[in-house]
Image (cartoon, rainbow, N blue to C red; front, side, top):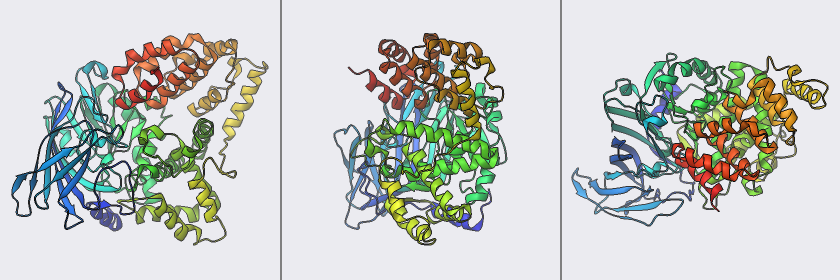
Amino acid sequence: MKLTPIFLSLAMAGACSHATANAVDEHTYANLNDVITTHLHLDLDVDFADKQLEGFVEHTLQWQDNSSKTLVLDTRDLDIDKIMYQDQNGGWHKASYTLAKRDDVKGSKLTITFKSQAQKARIYYNSRPEASGLQWLTPEQTASKTHPFMYSQSQAIHARSWIPVQDTPAMRVTYSARIHTPKDVRAVMSADNKDALYKDGDYIFDMPQAISPYLIAIGAGNLEFKAMSKQTGIFAEPTILDASVAEFNDTQAMIDKTNAMYGEYAWGRYDLLMLPPSFPFGGMENPRLSFITPTVVAGDKSLVNLIAHELAHSWSGNLVTNATWEDLWLNEGFTSYVENRIMEEVFGRDRAVMEQALDAAGLRAQLKTIDAPDTRLNLKLNGRDPDDAFSSVPYTKGQLFLIYLENKYGRDKFDPFVKTYFNEFSFKSLTTAEFVTYIKANLIEKYPGVVSMDKVNEWIFEPGLPADAPNPTSDAFDKVDNATQTWLTGSTTAAQLPTNNWTVHEWLHFLNNLPRDLSIEKMTELDAEFNLTQSTNAERAFAWYMLAVGNGYQAIYPALDNHLSGIGRRKLIVPLYKALVTHGKREWANKVYLNARPGYHPLAQGTIDALFVK
């Protein structure tokens, strides 16, 4: 894609590694003050039989301290074979190293010592089958049932489980790779995938823009490709390829609208990789190639806000990155805000407001279940795994903060602020403190008397929601509420509910707001009229199952077994397991889980395992 002059310069700047000096990342062992990696080269074999990646990674090094001769990397459950380094004259030598005892959160510190400052360091290693950032699936666990499948999930601190690397978002690195697979298996990466269009088992990749290590990604399986537009396409197993293309063919329109609002897309192509149902998240914003769950292929484009979210990361998150995982809201809050603006531009204001309202209601419900300190935007992890503090707070509270600012300043002032923010910090990582300094100078003091810094600090550093936080409401939801009340009071029957033109958003509002002690008679009436237990929309089925588990509606259990066994998206399974345990179904849930567990990603396994530990 031809870039405008400003973004061409940014892309060129992105080719240089960057480390945020002000960041203190408690989740990395890396000695960034001494040395940083400017480029990674991977040469790996994808070994499905032994469930491992095997080969080497080569680090090109830039020394920050002239007296240092030590490189410290993050690893987790890696077997190190040997380490070589290239001196300033081009000669290669064997390096000495120590691999420390494994820490449950951070993994094992790899300390490499050179006799002289190295230009490059090459680590020969292999991952293990239990790598937290990789999932290996048998052919039977895939959609096509013909080939094995492997994919990575490096966020937050899982890149170290398949690459020895300075695993912190405070630094950025370019990378290249040569990946070897069986000849009938296609490999793809978060990079230029033009070589992956030819299936031959030997693939070359290049990522010229510098990214944080958690955005390095790989997938391999029975993948075919189909273009959607000049700039977009989909890699997927053949059985889901056409349906995915039909579902997501508005992606180019999303890119075009975002270009107009926030500056031109800076990454070249934007393709999607459809993953097996075991993928633990809705999507992952890996640059140039977002990883997507098949649970959003609903057949009616009702869940495509997920694509808008992953695309929005191309500006907020990938282009401008949180420097530590305590600053995650800078990534996800801005992305959730931009996502909603994209949805408004492509699908209209009414749909965008419904999605705001659903997310805000979900956040307010979740705030009641989270410890107060974890409801702050600038989170304090205190040594915890970032995955353990995952919630809707950085996403939706962050989005509401930005909506609050938009409402106060108006889009005529706030949109240029956001666009300039993306421009100012492109291909950089920043801390919350740096953001506070920036917003003070470029919004609060630029337009005095509108919002105070005390209010900004309340949003960012105080728990919960401010009393004057936005509370998005939808006229469509008001009509749903009125119809619900007439049915609950017995004035109408379920058949008379005006559902013919309800969107999935109206259905979710309806189900999420029904009384949690709804009678079995009413549950049975709803199910008989709308066949909710057999819903093919994963989000609607989840909302119905959550209601039914709490109310003791037994008719759901065969379908619920299929739901829990058929997908691994944590959002759609973890709350159900928790509800089952809470409502006296531990034994049934444990039996289902033991059968389903082999098909779940390690991230989902770790979360759900804890529910059944006595």
